[in-house]
Image (cartoon, rainbow, N blue to C red; front, top):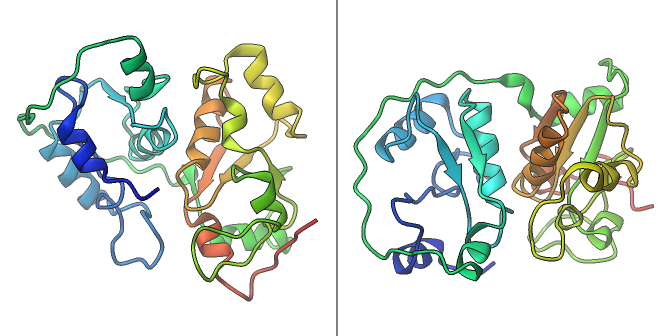
Length: 252
């Protein structure tokens, strides 16, 4: 997005908020962007931020909740359930004229015990096994959070070297379809309808995907609010799938 999030945070943030860098708290040995880090790295980084066992964590971002949902999902994947997303994020906070700070936040280090939940994460081999019939999918569905034009391959990908299109059999639900006019996440029947109108069976397992594993977490968050527990996120997403010529792609 050509923004400088750390600089924006330093200029103005919610009082007592600490800065979580999704690009650094990641697997930097991977050639894919912000992949999940190891248990050890995640726990080491969040401990230093003062985020640990017994801590209530609320995540927000500068856009609304598009990247905040990714951080929410990361904590969930590492076994921390007491985590929430600030609906509307910083834009709503500003609109409601709530207080801001530009002071450094010094947090006391806390112990964080990672309990990695492998079932919340999918990789390319697992998806290929399901597509080829080598693994039972039990009605599993893949939902792609990218725009309809990117999903159909009629708009270029923002990352160079990626093909256009989508994973065969996947369904498209742009993550922006889960927001109402003021940028808040849809609730109740309206949220449920966003999924069912996209042809998604809310009684079957779901894997969410997007461009790089960030906005897919918005769909994951929405499904969690609907009580759907059989949800995983394809961490490599289109950055991986679209960049590997041997993997099948559909555009229709």
